[in-house]
Length: 321
Image 1 (cartoon, rainbow, N blue to C red):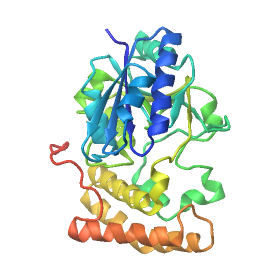
Image 2 (image 1 turned 60 degrees about the horizontal axis):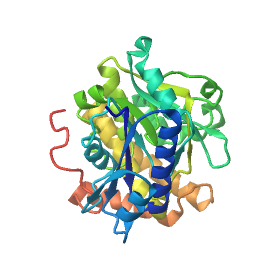
Image 3 (image 1 turned 180 degrees about the vertical axis):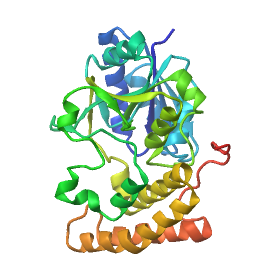
Image 4 (image 1 turned 120 degrees about the vertical axis):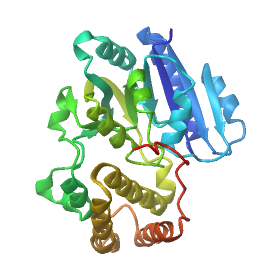
């Protein structure tokens, strides 16, 4: 039986995806771990993509006719495997040798039976460790992030992520970053996978929160490590990505804290976050320019009042919740 199913979702990152497949298979051979790689191309029209992936190694390729969103595409890939563990890996992430062995050894240990999800240490392209895990957001956390309190010096760098000091050793956490997330297949199936109402962003937070409801912890495993470039596809349209991020934050609020709180958070986003982001952009203190901020909130408004402008989540996904 295969030890790990590795699911890679490609969208406007073909070159990274091919390198990722090659690296995963190389690490699997070195670690003595059997891995099946599934690449899900999310509606990206690339000539010769399948041939390039197959040239990198033995991998299954699914060609979606459109961009179904990260969670939906990940679910499609995961259903093609039967391994006891599933690793969801961004195409711009590169596994370090020893990482697959570290993951599987840790999760197979009897005393770690209460851990359902594990994430590795993540390093940027310069080799520096970056925040990759955090507590699960509370009502106050979501409001604080909306009004920009996470940027204050006393809030700590990267809030609500745990500090870099806390990344020095392995420990239980609220959630791990979806750029590299391993989950036990029985837990994944019990949760019915990622909630496809999250087109992009917060699907990793949501699945960690739902796992904890079942008594299964998330864990930061320093012995496993990946390099992650970050924002390869999302940076190509910052305004669109910002709109999706805010919508997913609101979706998470509604699912986990109720519709009334969701309405309160929406007002905070519209009345406080929007002008604050715009001011930051005008002062040159934001990665998203003023035009991108206007575009993001225009898309959100159109989506709210007409259901257009932003991609619709796949119908029926987790409708029982």
